[in-house]
Image 1: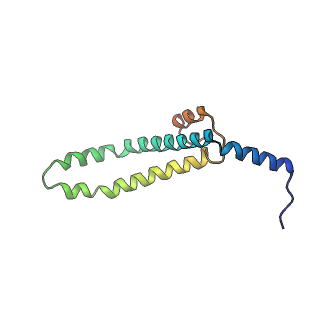
Image 2: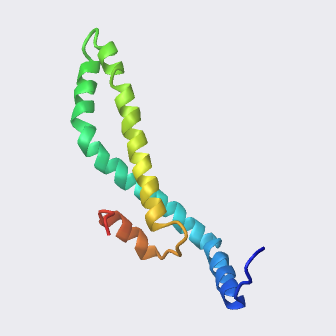
Amino acid sequence: MTQPTNPADELRRHVFLANYRSREQRTLRGLAMAVLVLKHGLRGSLLFLPLYLIAAALAFQPGALPYVLLLVPGLLWWAWVQIRGALRDYDQRVRHRLLKRKDLRTMMDSTGED
């Protein structure tokens, strides 16, 4: 048996959902996801950039292709970790919230531990 709900709570929930599903909010959530993926991708690339610069240098050496191919699983793991981090931040900062444009700048500037 369902519990009786307060009509004021139902009204608040429906107003929130109407705003949350608006085109502006969908656009802001999409931009927020892009910002978070970019932020995590850039931070992660700083960690692995030296390794892949070495791989790029090796790629031009004769017979080095097998060694370069060994780095592909590392690149896939790096991408998986970065995307997982971006999704975690999305869940913490964006999901079930109404956003403003200034929130996008805050997401890019902050470290994610607030």
